Image 1 (cartoon, rainbow over the protein chains, first blue to last red):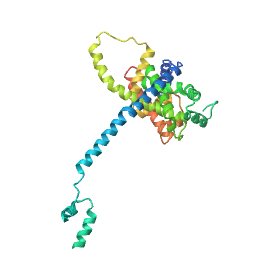
Image 2 (image 1 turned 180 degrees about the vertical axis):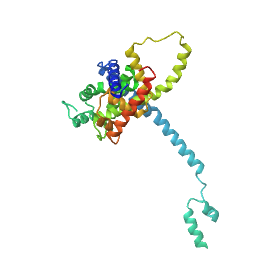
Image 3 (image 1 turned 60 degrees about the vertical axis):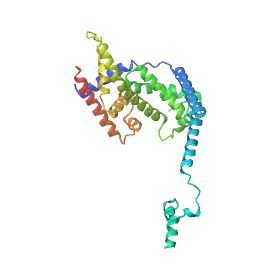
Length: 103
Length: 183
């Protein structure tokens, strides 16, 4: 089949195919679906507000509590300010400065 | 795009959730979007569903529309993406349903197709076998009768030449596929 003939053939088949497309007025059906969709979205938001958010906050609060209870170091006395402790502490910068002063 | 509203007016009205403007956009674009969608999914009910989803998305997310393209170009992009997302999920479902069909199908069950229906079904199969970009270009060109410039804009292609090449390759591939079916 020549290219031009094939183009005409394709146009013809597509036109026949397009007759199968229904173009009914489905605006109301779409609006109903939109309303249902918005309801479900708002109910999801409500669920997040009333159920998931408080739960999430509780989990975060518990996590923070455990984090502090595990990592909170015992109150340091003057004796605990050894070189080793100073190096291991989070304020390593200052400890290095102190050590260099000692040297 | 419109007689009743200018492009700016319609977008502003849509962002203000104006129901009359929404209905106007629906009536203006519904048939064209459905043609494109049908050209890809080849099923009237599925196309109807997808086009409705496009309008629901429009209503929900028009505030995010940055007006870098026209509203119709934006809608065409959404419908093309949704159609292909649908096809991808359908492919997975089909794997299971074909297996079920094979189990339940009787050997002497032959579908009675007339010539036109057979040609249409062959064309659908040929389009489905095309690479995604070729299928999109083919559908916009043949089903929606878009100009090559418009197609380039919708698909964000660099030039009209790229569109021409894609149409040419799509036709060649379809010709090849349909030839084996007796055309």
